[in-house]
Length: 270
Ligand SMILES: [Zn+2]
Image 1 (tube, rainbow, N blue to C red):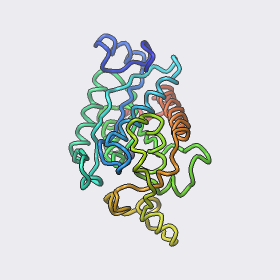
Image 2: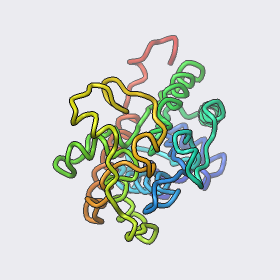
Image 3: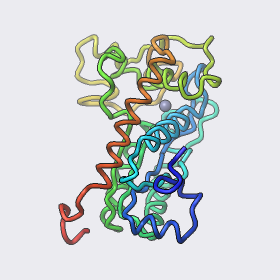
Image 4: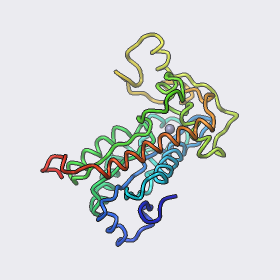
């Protein structure tokens, strides 16, 4: 999966090899995911499969001049909004914040200064923001918050309304799963699950579940099935295009993180 010398898996290395990578100012990349319901057509592992798939594809693209290391993924995240559907595993916000900051502190202790938190689950965003700032303040790390679903999508890949409202188990995630793990997709159960947000936007409301002014939501608030989006728009070809596009963006972000000049940050904190 990764270049054996410049792009290894963290857990495959020895202490001497970790020290050598840190001395080379390598970037540590931590995939953050979730194990949670994604409707009747996708497995609980959807966010984990997408996160690992995108990270692997990004590492395959990294130039040898960008030393980087992939940490073991944090499979379970913050999934309070999916608590009411069977199979969801969730940490509390307090536990997730402690876990992230303790892993980051371990990475800093190993001599790394550059950490990318690569996230594939929307519910993790707020705790990642907090953990990143704590690690910046307390360990002087450069911490990058990279949520793939915030990356600009390929133009014309999907209708704007699906990109905005198909937040969970819709066309985007279903397509990437058709490409990355087709044996896990229950094709017979694929359907269209419109979001309450779509209806509110159609009625001209500024208020919605996300966007300018969003309300906190449980998954079944947006659609009783706990899924939002039109999975019927998904194809494996679209999934391949999305994976390629998001992986290219992640590879660029890792390279930018490696190339970032620490002298540009406040001197007391670097
Ligand atoms: Zn998901």
